[in-house]
Amino acid sequence: MPALVLLGAQWGDEGKGKATDLLGGSVDYVVRYQGGNNAGHTVVVGDQKYALHLLPSGILSPDCTPVIGNGVVIDPAVLLSELSGLNDRGVDTSKLLISGNAHLITSYHTTMDKVTERFLGSRKIGTTGRGIGPTYADKINRVGIRVQDLYDESILTQKVDAALDFKNQILAKLYNRRAIEAGKIVEELLGFADKLRPYVSDTTLVLNDAIDAGKVVLFEGGQGTLLDVDHGTYPFVTSSNPTAGGACTGSGVGPTKISRVIGILKAYTTRVGAGPFPTELLDEDGEALRRIGGERGVTTGRDRRCGWFDAVIARYATRVNGLTDFFLTKLDVLTGWERIPVCVAYEIDGKRVEELPYSQSDFHHATPIYEYLPGWTEDISKAKTFDDLPKNAQDYVKALEEMSGAPISAIGVGPGRTETIQINSFL
Image (tube, rainbow, N blue to C red):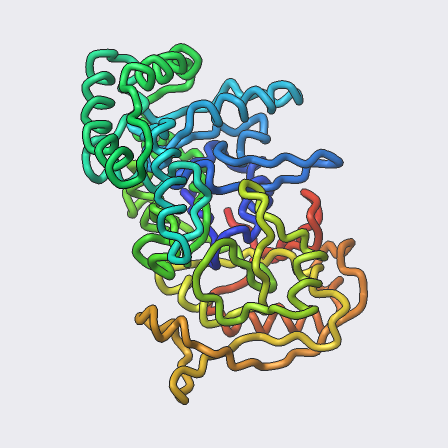
């Protein structure tokens, strides 16, 4: 049985939660492998809507084991609050597994995140202010706090002291802020230890054993390809690797065990935060996409920037992730447009460019070259098969598939759990 990676093929917010949840009934394990509570998924089950910020979407499937892998950074207060909220709504969260190697976001990480962003002023990155970047920085600088450190007070104290030695100098001398007391941080973190203990596990061993036993394991990325710290629109990116390679490093499962890589695409494009966005619409069409699509960040609450579909980005996502399939979401949002522009290439310095430029400066100055496809007015939310779609909607999907370089195997025609057309099985 397969091990699947499911990830965003744009700038995130493509509907990965719905796609993951759709597969949940057939999947034994769902694994978050990177990011933190700066990513969010909205999953609609019947008349219930769930906003998940840190937990894998598979937590809503009773037969699925949700896993938070070593590549994730965890704010323990946020995690426990999210678990409590689901428990209050009758969701069983007892099967959750958390890697002991995952790093913890502390209150000093969120402090550093916020003061640094304010200090940057007009040069700010557009972070969520939740401490994600500083936590990953500490991980790389080898002064991070891991989940397993909660169970050795001596080591925890040493690590907090080491992390704050330098940070307190910066806070006091650069930002004119009061130094943070290490003892209070240690006490705060130890307060989470017993509450998290039932979930902590050697998830690398669990997942490899599961795959070897023929179980279906789904690796769920947060954010999207263009926010990858190595392959995205740097520096306007996240601090981890949402691309397919991150699934391996963020879980401890080798690449030879991955059998399928599914990219999630919106039928148009959105982005949260700063950075270049060639097809962005600052007009009535952009506002209509935002309103009809409900384009507000699940975690941030910020309005998403909206634009037309960008096939250049889709081709790039296919290439850097080795995508085998696409799941196209929110096709229903485009209902009502007489014609729909699709970006097929860029113009940069008077030249047509059909692949994503490696130069950030070139990408920043890219102007979209559009082809126009006929729209449709029919309600597609009740469509169960591809043939149920109006011809123009079918033609739109076929055109996007040809431009993007991988087959579209599923189509979202509404926000509900059942409002999906399955063309090819992912399993």
